[in-house]
Length: 109
Image (cartoon, rainbow, N blue to C red; front, side, top):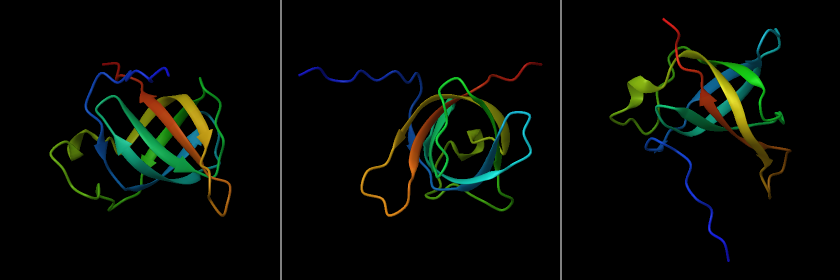
């Protein structure tokens, strides 16, 4: 049996926070909930299936905090661009839900 190798370069932390996202350069916003995050990316659940390589704009809803709070909460950006790395359906859900993994684009200064 082959084990999956971890590809993350930074620690992943649990975080439940409501946010919206849109496919880059589109107006429609979709509600989502974060599951965990790191300084490089985010895992969330959504009713929208996304193709790997898609660029999305993430907007944390005003007043939202990471639950449970942790020492890296300030690294969860309130607005940012990210690339979809993977998307898979969540089994056993009453509605069609997807788990999505994204990697943040680094800021260009």
